[in-house]
Image 1: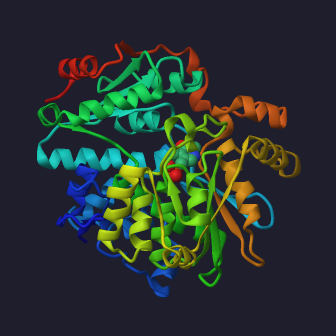
Image 2 (image 1 turned 60 degrees about the horizontal axis):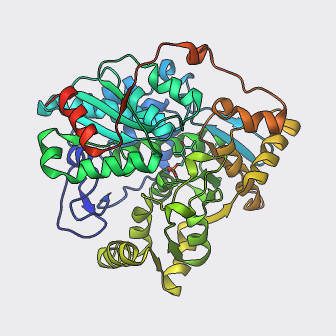
Length: 470
Ligand SMILES: *Cc1c(COP(=O)(O)O)cnc(C)c1O
């Protein structure tokens, strides 16, 4: 399988190159030249496979430059019951007659980002070993991404992680989760400032090409194709767990932010998985709901981006969205370049033609929005009627899924986090304390390791130069 850029720059890459590069040189995102389709016989065979073997079957359709045995071993050591808490890895549980929840949040940090990040860590380690190279990962986080990245990279050969976070802006639990890591290759840099300050520093450091090259600075962005590919697997697994054979069509509803998760659903559907609708749920930050309803895509200014009670969906623009747009626009890279490379970067928005907008339906997408009041009500309802405790992101998904239920079609809502990290809203909605897995008992009392740095690119670069592998 070869990979090309959504903006048509003349690149022709293999998986391992795409893995290490992230963004394409022309500013586009890497996509496979085609989506391999699976026939009925293959689906039937896959239905019986354990998760890691299913993942191997799917990933090997997209990866041909890692020897099969090695790829199989990497995947087998990633998706284990020890790391993900159950033999199914992503167990399905019933909410009511029409909705089931696919639990993607039993990994080391209790958020679905572990599903992809754990694999990414192992793929990085293997590739760096092959190349005899070092990687210094630089990132900014206000919560889940940072901890998922750190738990995936801790103790890895040839990798150092430098994670910036805004001082005192993360929840106590999130701080404790990251700062209690004692691994020498994990560096928590606490910045006096906001999340935007942290992100600006990362951008400034990455823009210094000489520094970037000298210190092999890389990222673990959600735009990395390997992360998206890892997520395709659980759509298949969820479908197989929910059905007895491959005749039933199921809808998936996805609490969305950067469009990575639901884009993996799009890939699964393109491969032939019988998905009825892909239902996209946003919170108050509704860039994507607006797009799927009107064909207009308008990135929000940071002053317009709201802080909500489903914080991992608080986005101003959706960084993975360009991949779907590429398919929607008939893989016309010139049109993508015009919309994303020019109109979006110059005017902050674009509008599709009526004909282009009409073609959205062919891809099965519909959307909806959920607000704080909806979230509270949905959490309370799931608790009172079904004794099922759901987190605020999943609640956004359940609310929007209900609005799009089709007769005779069941829906799977992706459970993207556990209630554990959102005690306040859970308490308000249910009067209960969210249960705490044994693994995090006393987390807040553990010793902490972090470093306060001045809010400047120079200070961060100096820190990296002192502590990195070069
Ligand atoms: C990251 C995240 C999302 C959004 O996923 P995208 O792939 O960015 O659309 C939703 N819920 C939770 C809990 C997350 O951590």
